[in-house]
Amino acid sequence: MKRILIVGAGGQIGSELTQFLRKLYGESNVVATDVRECKNLSENGPFAVLNALDANSYGYTVNKYKVDTIFNLVALLSAVGEKDPQLAWNINMGALMNSLEVAHQYGCALFTPSSIGAFGPTSPKDNTPQDTLMQPTTVYGVCKVTGELLSNYYHLKYGVDTRSVRFPGLISNVTLPGGGTTDYAVEIYYDAVRKGRFTCPIPQDVYMDMMYMPDALNACVQLMEADPDKLIHRNSFNVTSMSFTPEIICAEIRKHLPDFRMDYKIDPVKESIARSWPNSLDDSCARQEWGWKPKWTLEEMTADMLKVISERFGKER
Ligand code: SER
Image (cartoon, rainbow, N blue to C red; front, side, top):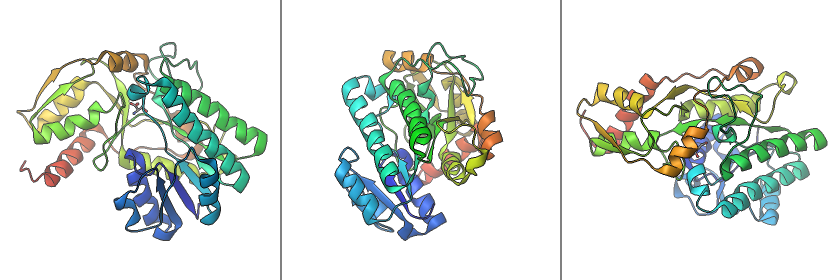
């Protein structure tokens, strides 16, 4: 990776991945793009407004900056996708198809995240294997499975260097996620610091895989830098750092904020999505094929999240 383009850079992953890659590869070598202006991304490196659904502008931008690697981060998340499935399909698949075509045309490597949402109620729940039944029941998941297959197809048919990981819920403190089923695990930290209480939309006993953003950023770089001869899989690798329920994360926060209170107001859409996803993934293929090894545990992440958010909002702890 020498000249990188990030599409959808204004979102939860992109806003941190842009800065992470700029530190690693040089500020001028990482071009951030989004459908709208993003001040935080244009201050220390190249930025362009780009609608990933506009194939001509996409190709023009890749050509202009002589890009060799694309990170396609454009996606509507799972819960919001259920409100307008056609829009979710058009955005998620439209951005992917254009990314694949442009990568093919200009000889770029392409990273597109997949998700735990690619699994469904018929997949094994615990230690969900890398290669298993995938029959998701959300439009988001249908897009992810289709995207995995299409990305493998472009690799097999045209030799495009497509790679991907199935991210679990990502927890971060820079840009909020929006419209995801796992968003509660980010919001809980903000509400714990600012209000001392949180109303949880997910039932107390539902496990989902999660990961702290620093591990997710490392996964992106490590996979894209991996020796292609060692990759048996490409689209997409199971990766995880931790798996917990709302009850477990609440107990962890209480170790720092003993007065923290949590109650429940279950969101039926999010509940049914969460219950259709795995409890925990088996990520041994990622470990074997490209050395994946997460660093952050729930304990360490909680301490860090509460520290950073407290400092930002000027709260004593
Ligand atoms: N975080 C995503 C969501 O909840 C899953 O990848 O939709």
